[in-house]
Length: 409
Image (cartoon, rainbow, N blue to C red):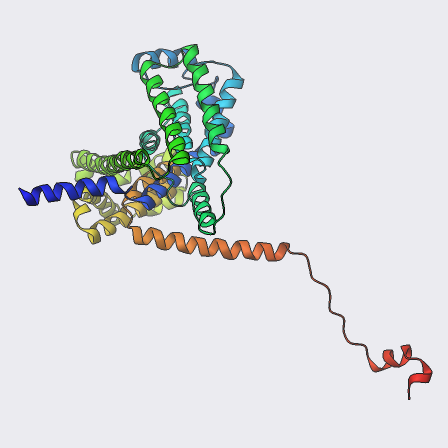
């Protein structure tokens, strides 16, 4: 009984004393924000037909569907072109700011609003990758995904360095201004009756928690209330991180077990057919080359099923997990090129990144920092103004020419 109590207390302490996986959640944040940002930029010329007023899924049909399933989207509030353009630009900006980690807590909520608003406007446009982005956008709201590799972390590090030197860092003004602006917008939307009860409660609770966090951190950074807020935030973060990992495992396990039941996957020919569909052949010569070798098709078909079914069971063995993780990421990279599904593959690779080893991520971050430092130093050196030019010493003839005749002796 004492051993069990000790194990439980250690588990509770580990869950509440720190936010686990800071590098993993950071790379998930960067991966999904970057994927959604690139997708919106690529589809910018076609945005009207996908999510705007010119979409085949009309505004009236979208409103009827949202009224039945209570999904969230701001695009049903108005059918004007100006409103749609504003929402699309808002989704672009929130994705870019979440990518670089500026005001991560607020941007994660705004990123979720942008994702849900566009995807729930036209529910038949997306694919499996969009579904993964849809879910992960919700999970990221409850994580502390800006602990590393973010502008928030850099600002906190500079503030700590200033205090260590005995200086007083400048007070944070952008945070309170952003919080007030979001609160004003939320009050207007709530008063207009655009939000359902559940969404109203969720957004107001998030807004109040963000304000409480800033106030306690500003007035009493080492008090008991701040410690309590840290404990709650760590517990919520770790729970959300566990859900992200479970979601990734669930995606692969269900996909693998459903493939086992298919006759084409059982006889080893399932991979052959997508390679001959016009929609999935951006490089016909490459698709024909891969499908022309029956052994390759057989190995890829069976290997895909084996990796997807086995992956959740390899989490208990680090080496086996890393091998299958590399295999799955390589497979998604091949799918992106051969089948022409780059954003689906990027979304799945971002989900897989939650299982990457911390040591590997730290090495990648350190190497990226060194490369960036050399690039920045080289750019500054090229932009620097040239110094004074050194003139060559005068020759004997020039000296004799400019020397007075009476001084030659």
